[in-house]
Length: 311
Image (tube, rainbow, N blue to C red; front, side, top):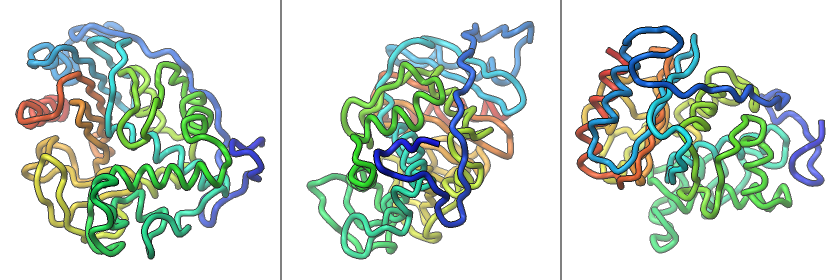
């Protein structure tokens, strides 16, 4: 198979088998919140209807069950800045690079003593952004870091001899039919997408085609367990669990999604008022996009949305 990175021979990374990248079917239907494919009101429909009551300029959402077609609602073709939700797509592309052998999770990357794995798990010691510098030794604290994700993407960019934006498009966006998704700048916070495209990404998490299932399982696994940390604008958690770009601290009091999602849930929220999570116990993923900056309003309505989906 032709590798994505120029000059990179596609090969299995240690413990991670190769997976052929095949395009996803692109047919996701828009729906009203009270009827889909002849199905009457359900918990998913009722949850999506809540979006219409939120004090936001625009909102769109999708509920993506593992065993049936996604339900989508609102401005389904509207392009939103998804902010830090885009870190999940960046991580997915970087793990394609791991499967290709362009990079490895144990590659030195970031501050001294840090690896690519540290960067993807917010455990490298980097502060939030470039101005914060290095504020802890690698593997000692969970410090949420845009700079760390940017350094991880730059590491792959150098190894593959390809701009990260192009790598993301060829490795992830094109195979999944995410034609309305674009990365104009930082892989940590600038991604723009639609709710339909991100519903396709959730379907990929349920039945991986771009990555091997074992690779996705590793991304969902807590890295460097036991690290305490601060979830920006939400609160302190001990431990603050994280996989490879996937937050893993769901199901706890004070969490932005409330306590209804299981502890096996993974996902992310974005400062643009966006979130995506997938609960394997309930067998459902959700994505909600708005254009109101994250704040106290979100901590009030997002847990109620999760409660409605998982009732």
